[in-house]
Image 1 (cartoon, rainbow, N blue to C red):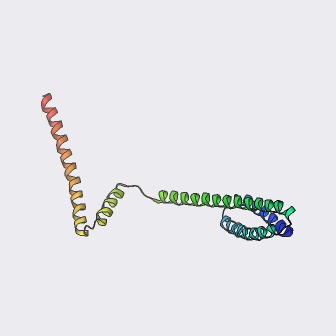
Image 2 (cartoon, rainbow, N blue to C red):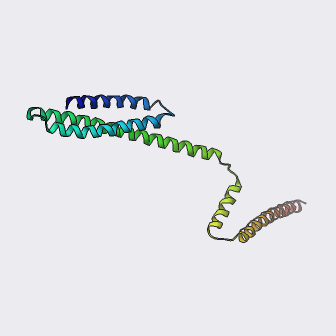
Image 3 (cartoon, one colour):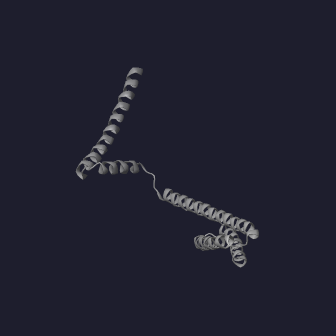
Length: 165
């Protein structure tokens, strides 16, 4: 049991060392994560074997052996949690970078609103003909509003000039 325990204990310390390097490795982090996960899986299988061996120890050594195996198990579970937390942070960081790039690549125009309206109309099942008629009407309404505004301003200015005479 002792040689297997020592090998496993040494491997736990190696993983702790690699976890420290994981924080500084940018592009190789996924590869290092996979190596760490493979090592953790290997340790878990060794721990199962160690549990069996610890139960076969003489009664006066059994309690201490089980305690040492439980401590190793706790350390490995802690490493597993730390690896998952790192992976979660990396995924969140990658998602933020993708969203940032998406936002930076967008062009913000008033046509965007019109496009959204047309997309919604298309989603509702309106035909292309109906959507073209809506676009044409919106175009006509725009010029009608400009013309009406101009007429109102002209009438207002004429009313002022007639009132001051």
